[in-house]
Image 1 (cartoon, rainbow, N blue to C red):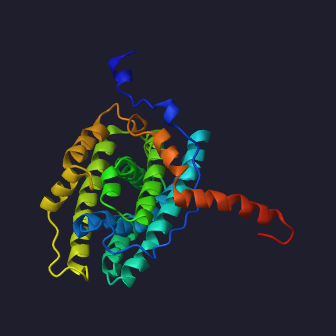
Image 2: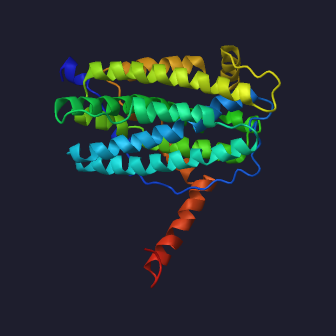
Image 3: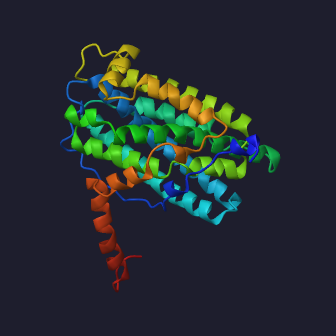
Length: 314
């Protein structure tokens, strides 16, 4: 094998699994505002997910529906359809947290309006002539999604292993949301990258769009944390800073800066493939015990049976 061939991304075949959306439901009645007890900074650092993901994952779905006619591989097409179903459910689940935050005196609307603008306008569809220009913009967005999915998979793997959150008494409903979502991110971690490689795979585009995605994520995340801390009705003078982030990482309630830094050369390596990082077996094992996922699974057969009954279902 040539050196050039050895640098091509190599998927780990055993890490592939069929994808399905799980129609989960969460009850936020008993979830406190600071669901990591005594740690509003770490709570709100993770809460930024509820601000970014609804609009972001709706955008993923919108772009991928445009991509479907261009997919020539049958298994990849099935993976993308499964990905679309899971991402749509993620968007809905995080969106459902926002009324709970508002009821507790923390209205996220001013920030989510900015996020909506980013995905719907800045990264949305453009009036471009058919052909090269339109395809270029579609491929740019496919590549940006692949870069973002590198980090959602990173966070998914982290939260599945974040035992410090349990030790600190984090709210079990919020933990289940994060770990159900994280497990599905690990489960489908290769789809966005495989789609990018299938349609384009250019290394320069991968690097360029990674830089765009990484810069945007860091910018939006720090703004989101500052927004939450400044508007938290419980805090007198809520401020967010990197010192709190470093401290939380050392204590295991947030990812460490070292782990985040190591994720950068992973993605930029020419031989990188998402299946080389994380464990599908661990993700599937959590989904088998997740309260929300198992409840969704239990509802599914009943729904299907009702649909088959005379007069049942559409």
